[in-house]
Image (cartoon, rainbow, N blue to C red):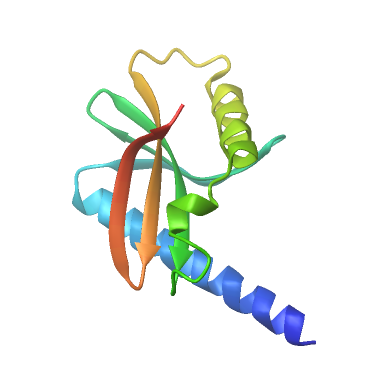
Length: 119
């Protein structure tokens, strides 16, 4: 029973972090194209556009650094799934802009936007 309670807490923490990240992005001129974009490879937290950049953004929320920084939780297998999900999203779309992969860390309520975090 305790595990289920922890899972719910983590899900709520993640959802709150994603909401904070979307608010941060829009306040910095980004347009949210999609949130929680489900695809055969997983889910992309946020797809956003600003000027000539289309960003696929992973949001990681942490209250402590006991297990490392939030961005350290984005392991190689997760990066590959994000890249595959982005390719899936872009199929049959005529996109003439820079595509990049960002990470937004929400750590103790503070935002750290890591541009071009991986490729």
